[in-house]
Image (cartoon, rainbow, N blue to C red):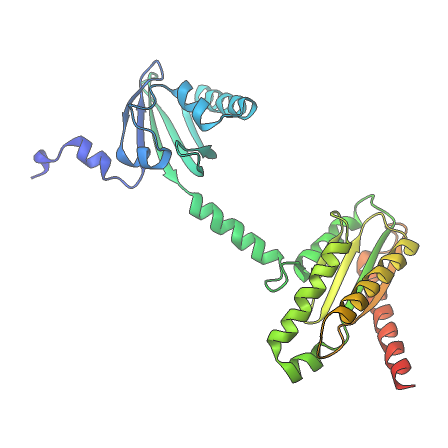
Length: 284
């Protein structure tokens, strides 16, 4: 019967952690799930100040969290935050805290470990802006960055478009796994040669784009040459069944009078001109 069921048994079977603190901010109760989430039992930690020190070893971060906590309780007697804490084992976890002031003295704290939810959210965000095969940014992210830089002061801005010359032949004759290898190697070369502030994206099946803030046309031309040289170097070192080559085109704007989408289109056109020129030379 219900009367035979103790309150402690009920609290220990809840799907959220429960902690109760008295008027001096001493812990007077922790249920089993709170101990599982934080690693601490009442034998390990006695008051809120001790917990702050263990959860936030960095004093600056600790002070920010503590100040926010105290200010919110003073204003509304309620506190709700997702915080990254360090557990007793040293593992970092994302925990949602819901704190209510009871009778102006006691605090009732509900805890939920939301680490998996946060990790999944980050994974979804990552996948929404990255190409799964190469881990470069995707077209969506690249277009967002073009819009953002349209309003920036990072001029001159250059864009380079690159298209692998023989990927269709590789896929048709040696399979898509071989084609994927060409794409991954291409991505590695671009990442190796670009600066941290440059935006590199795979924007199509065999097409790449690079957004270069504060880069003049002359610099973009030098970068294109370096990319071509690196492809040529790898092509001579590796035993590729079909030549590992890329066609490049670039375009530059010195101010925001021309939208970056127009620069992108010019770079794309220049890339196709260079690709056509290479084909004509090969036929001679």
